[in-house]
Length: 433
Image 1 (spheres, rainbow, N blue to C red):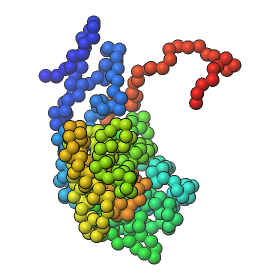
Image 2: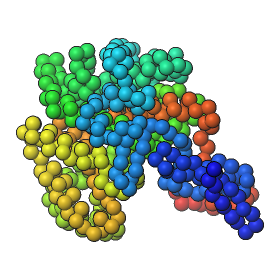
Image 3: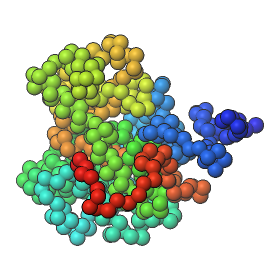
Image 4: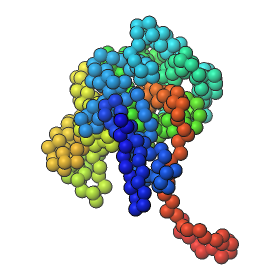
């Protein structure tokens, strides 16, 4: 029996069906709301609006649960690697050995950039933000792979996914090298995905960079933890752009632009800047906590709280332990880690944060690990984008294979001026800029 929700106004009663998800999540199907009632919903930020049905990622924010295709993030973090997770997200199940070997071979074959594409970097100023370059260069890839920009079958989707996942790390590394005036370093077929990324960023022709196994694993794990996160801002952007019929490369490029924002992919950079400010002597951890509770102070405790999680972010717990391992193997001491641990300890005992369920999120520790490895702050969101790419591809594929999907077109409630007449320029009053 279909469950319905009844909506009433002063004159009529309307029924709308309830959609139930795998984990008993319930949503009201209001796709006919306007046509039947004349009303639309108003939900700024879409915090209570389901934009689609998806089989990719499940989150329970109240219980701190995150699963990719049904598999808990804790199990993937312990047993898997980024390429296996990417394959899982895109295709829906774990790959066999033969499937894995084929996908790995495709990644290796597509690691290099077209030589003409390399010249695009010369058009950017040396201090251009790497996210601007990343978005532009991913979009430019569609010019070099026009047949695969709109893949039509599983083989084409696999090849397009391999092109993007493999080349995005090369683009990222080249953008970093260009900002430093250093020569580009090419990938090596024998290296793993994360190892190649670090190699291309930090190696020099006269001084190769040796990647410590624990550092390689740390980067791989960070990419896994960022690989997908349901309908966040950038993923929703990818799906919205895809709904217009835009190709995969253009949709991903738009997702990168959305991720660039400091409230999304730039949040871990904001955490580091907060910790640096505390360490500089302007305030200590206790003062920071006190000021964060004062709405008029202008101080926010970055890295705490999450739009979805009302419990400890499971990714943050994994990264907290990872940060200790990385610091240990690198013999690296960072006062920012001590400050971060102190902030967490104070906040988790403070009634203000406990009552509001403000726990550390993934951004709280990822920036500290990047800092230890030597990744500059402006590259933090680039690593985020590399990690999130498989999720974007999976959502683009899911959206395009849904025959019932429509072009995304939210409604609005107009609050501007009522009808008014055109005023000749000589009669118009001055206005403030």
